[in-house]
Length: 253
View 1 (cartoon, helix red, strand yellow):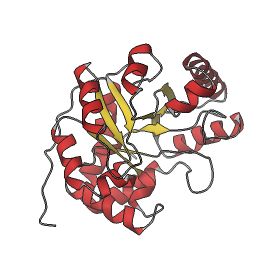
View 2 (tube, one colour; view 1 turned 90 degrees about the vertical axis):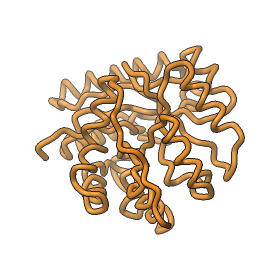
View 3 (cartoon, one colour; view 1 turned 180 degrees about the horizontal axis):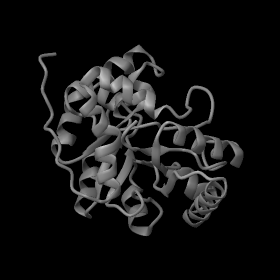
View 4 (cartoon, helix red, strand yellow; view 1 turned 90 degrees about the horizontal axis):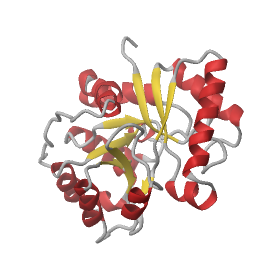
């Protein structure tokens, strides 16, 4: 690749959530990602696991340790901290108290939607997050029944200034044909902004695959759009810049 990739959703920290079982696997994830051309990885442990089992300070210290080991072993990939923040009534308070983290050094925050098909909380809480100056990035909307059952809601949220993050393996069918079809629809409607790996392990179904995802997205919407999702837009997010996005496209379907 002649441009760097940036992975904004990755569960590489060991023994925090449902990610790697040990530090060796974490370092292998970094090695595999770097081999694919990944310049920066955002570690995004689940907020619930961090705060119920550990602490924000603990994961910050752990990330520093991972960075030190990677540097000592000659890896150049940069690791920064974020969090996958499940949307619930306590989210806003956790943001204000520092228990729910945006992407390090930015006003962008990764938010996972409720698992219900319908939730009255979503628009209200997302609006409150915007009111305090943060930009929510909706994690893997293609896998959420909330949007599978109400596609218009995704249009509405994007039009209100929210971003979305598509999982690379959704594009090529690892979550099944239904999710794959919905992912393609999201992409063709300009509703997919960021492509990330959502890595949980070094080998198997949830291993690093951002480069493969890039090639699959290129097939659907072209190389320029795919590059935007893995490089241009995530780099701008990490630089905490405002984004100039193409408006959503309403299709005949």
